[in-house]
Image: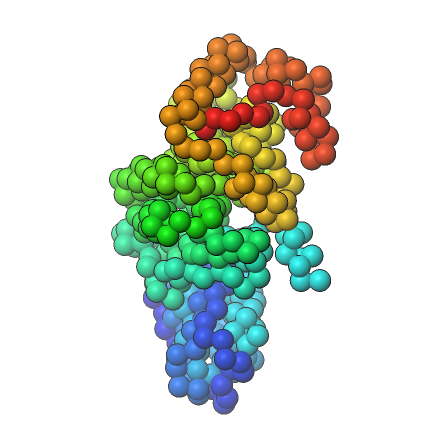
Length: 102
Length: 304
């Protein structure tokens, strides 16, 4: 297993007040994402556990793109990966952020 | 609008969380040991396998038509919904809590291939403890109703657990058995059971066959509304768990082997049950199938 953690500073907190949300399933080509509103409102942390080693640069790019788009300030994101493709990861992250907002 | 979407949600395609959310009264579900508590498998990292925050099972309490129910839903897509140590511990804990608190029923949304091989001893123990906890709950007057319609079906120890429930509802896509198709083929050869013959698999283990021989007590269309209606009906019809019920069950199973033991195919059994056109059963829609079931004596009983 490979563990990756990325920390970002955001311009604003993620809207809404819902404390946590989960989406996705750990299955082949899929992943689960747990979002918890536990950080300072300008911080976002994404921690990933993946059985597929060697794709840190791709994860870094996908996470950076997501943070820039969603501005998920205050949210700690934990991912259990089942070998999801980058596009699936990006969609799930946005889906998770939306769940936390509503 | 939202209610219509919830009702029409495909049970087979939905995740464990989606099923619970749509099945119970809106907003009534409270999860125990939720994902944020991170009670994950201590064994899977040894095999370099990914874990799930809830170890593949969602447990908690909610209301169904206003009455309190305890619920557990297995996620069939995470490791085939298989029983590991934490997964089993959560289910057993729920059942023991039900014994203590006496909800109107326990609903088990089974979706499992059986024991998780990577933690087999813990999984086998979990199966045994679950069966004991189910019988304890039933003996205390709490009906335990199994709802089976997920992509993993209900196999291995899950099949044994299903056999200890008060009542079972199953859909066409839900399959119930102990040894799965591949296991039988591996041990007995493709001449005995060809696991690639999907029609054979569904004919032998699928929901329609289980309903016709009385192994399941309700046949559901593949949507949440059908499973909710079946759950409410079966809770109301749960048999007493006493010596009379067990003796009736023993007699029913003995009669079943005597009457059908020499059949070579499920369709032979259906013919002997009095189904007019057994070959037509797999293609029947729910209404036609329900009419067929209503004419079959074996499908209705007071046992289990």
